[in-house]
Every structure is written in structure tokens, then in C-alpha cells.
Length: 174
Image 1: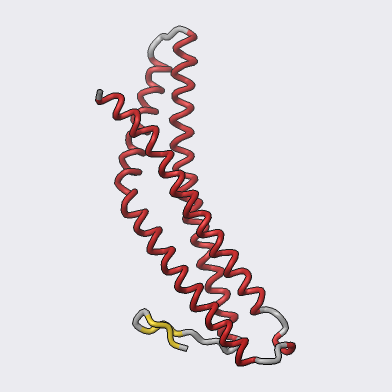
Image 2: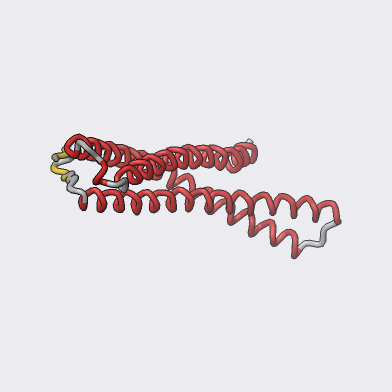
């Protein structure tokens, strides 16, 4: 009974984690596209714009929206990270133990060809799960870093154009 529970946890939890990573990746890509769109609008020829006050108001609104969405996304990533840290740590440790044990079985115990193929396949699957989890976590981190860089670039260009947004006590002041 305990073995079936351990196996279900070891093989089903990574699927759930990958789904959460995919969900966060979609949200991050959406925000990155939105920031890129506003940034391209900011870099348009400023001299051709007739109503500069309206244009500045629009960019202030865009910057406020981006900051709010980014803040919500960081909070969501932090919540998922806080909940998943212990699970992923236990999963990494368990997978490393299973991988080590499987390697010991494959190399130290004389096995028939059928069992050698079976253990090698199981070993490959465990390594694949471990690589998939590490890659997914790093992908979320890299995407978040790209969003931060793009957000700072957008803020820097908007400050050059006279669009100022100051955060004061979690309230945005123009």
C-alpha cells in the first residue's frame, strides 16, 4: 500500500508541477507581449502625435497597468513557490535516491538482459522527470527576468518622454 502511494506521488506530482509551470509561462508571455506592445507605441515618432497630453495620459495608464499586472504575477509566483518548495525538495531528493539505487542495481547486480532493459528504461524515465522539473523551474525564472528587463526598459523610455509614475504606499501617483 505504501509503495503504490509513493509511486503515485512520485509520478503524479511532477505532472501537476509541469501544468503550473506551463500556466505561469503563458501568463508571463502575455505580460511580455503587452509590455512590448506598449513599448513599441512609446517609440513611435513623438512629433507626429497631435494631442500630447492625451498620449502622456495613455502611457501613464499603460505603465500603471503593467506595474499592477506584474505585481500580481510576482505575488502569484511567490505563492506557488512557497507552496511547492517543500514538495519539490522532497521530490528531488526522492528522485536522486531512486536514480542512485537504480544505477547500483544496473551496474553491481548481474541481471538478465530483460531486467537490464527494464531497469534502464525506468532509470531513463526518472532522469527525464528530474530534468523536466529543473528545466521548467528555470524557464519560469528566466521569463520573469526578461519581463523585469523589459519593464525597466519601458519605464526608462517613458521617463525620457515625460511620463512619470511614482509608487507611494502601493498607490500610483502621476
